[in-house]
Length: 171
Image 1 (cartoon, rainbow, N blue to C red):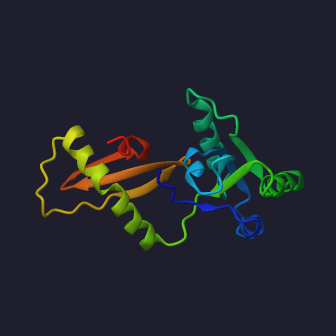
Image 2 (cartoon, rainbow, N blue to C red):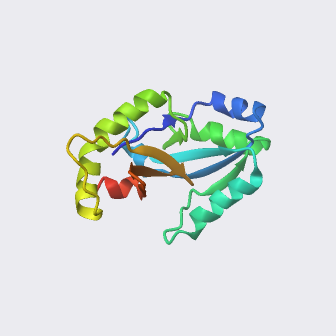
């Protein structure tokens, strides 16, 4: 399972506060379980926001899903109890593995994505689209995060598909 996100570093708490990105949304993150050392832990993803309204939209989207996410919560980094709780969750013995919706190197990520998705995208296009792509054509799928969920965007000519990464991985 492809996981592009970095583990949450405790120093991010202060950096987010300094950047006026005080709002975090916590949610369960199944892809985090694919990281070595995190398989026996509950994986969480933190997404940061400057705007409380946008954070609440993200939270509402999580709560609207059929399977309610019990880890979906709004965190205010200006509230000391919230910061203390995050610090406790980040401890190695906490039972949690926490990720942030950031990547380290976009060029490396694109290369990894191209390698990882090549066969999946090829099979998806054959089975789920009417696109006829020549062998010498090269598609470059891109990754997008929407409410903490990863989507792959595939463009061919004037057509475009946006598909959940988890759905592409089934092909």
